[in-house]
Amino acid sequence: MSQLYPDFRSGHLELTAARDSATPVRIPYVTGGTGPPLLLLHGAPQTHAIWHKVAPALAQHFTVVATDLRGYGDASKPDGGADHAGYSKRAMAADQVDVMRHLGHSRFRLAGHDRGGRVAHRLALDHPQAVERMMLLDISPTLTMYERTTMAFATAYYHWFFLIQPAPYPEELIAANPEVFLRRHMGNRHGGLAVFSSGAFAEYLRCIRDAGTVHAICEDYRAAATIDLEHDRADLAAGRKLSVRLRVLWGKHGVIERCFSALDDWREVSDSDVNGRALDCGHYIPEEAPEELTREMLAFFRA
Image (cartoon, rainbow, N blue to C red; front, side, top):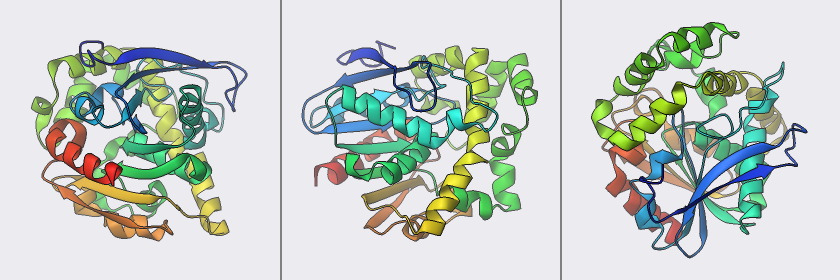
């Protein structure tokens, strides 16, 4: 991983006060640069390696922190529990708040892609005082996406419905040939595998070969289809909405563009300013369109 972030410092934190378990949760991170803190959260089935094409430019203006979410990369893979609460976005968001506090950042800017965007959404709801402003990449709210599922969405995002099947069914199928799963899952989208650097893809492949990672990814998705929806519906019933300024970006060649209305979807769950646009890429924005994303992030987070 060091070759992807040669000028960044790497480390990890053992979160001994993990809110959902007495067992410490290990969260690896890289950090670099000076200026206001900016936390970057990755998606599935990836790691903090996704940001390596944009982080150096961001570090010229911000203290950048990129972490592995629990269950991913070299982070701990705690038990999810019968209700999958160990991988609720609430638990995963709490990890990230603790990491930033340990690093001396009680308030920070926040960007999340894919699953990291869902963690960021929950983080901004549960810890609004910690987030100055937020950028979400290529997602609509989880509850919205499940409740507005169409044939087109279910076909394109089949993995949402495959990975939530009871253990160990999806785990065993992926473990039979994790490289085939990874190449087809990531390569069948706009841009194919060519958008990933050899170093980053090697890192994703190393991690997906770990049975613990595969189980954790499935638990993440199972939580999204169960306890996360409970939390989202509780917010809806209580009238709780995002209060942070929000910038939403998505790929114009991706599923969000085809099946959802990202800005309208996020405005439904926000009481603050929401704006954004589609970029000329597919789902993997930080690796498909790093220069355009960097310009967007600098303009939004420096304003």
